[in-house]
Image (tube, rainbow, N blue to C red):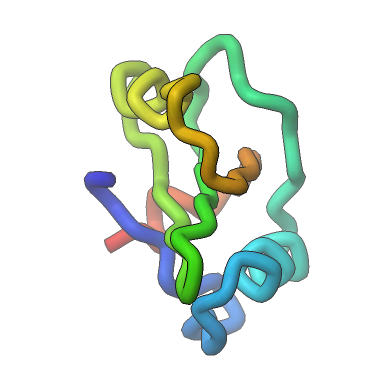
Length: 89
């Protein structure tokens, strides 16, 4: 993961769990989408790592394909979030 999303325009994402991270993104206008077939600016990948989750800004097509690893069985969701690039760190 190159760039993480730990905040929205409303401020820091307080709780690190998967459901809270997804909810925080959606409350700031992110839209849940199916696994993308083509890269476009604003793609975000959220993955459940057990006790915490991570949200990644997919800054390139290659990054998107890395996150689509079919051998990865962790719970994950894709979002389109227009502010992803400006808020990623």
